[in-house]
Image 1: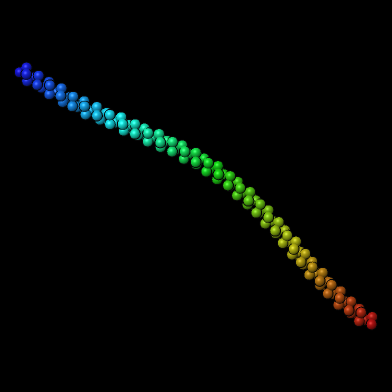
Image 2: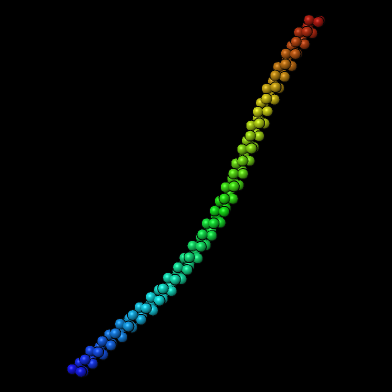
Length: 119
């Protein structure tokens, strides 16, 4: 009976040792996994902050380009207004020129008529 109990205790001890060995191996594996995941998290965090910095730079670039675009639109509007003014002046001067030609032609005919009356 004593031998039987001793055998049972030894068997339990051996099974506990095997269980502890399995748990120890699993613990080591989990520690390695933990280290791997910690490294991956650190890398992902670094990529995140790098992307965040790139987003800030792109936003700054967008703001600069929008400002430049607004300035170009204002310049274009000013140039268009100047063009319209020059076109309006050209049309006015063209009209005045045509009227002057008309008056010259009228004066020539009057001159010819007067010259004909005098002769």
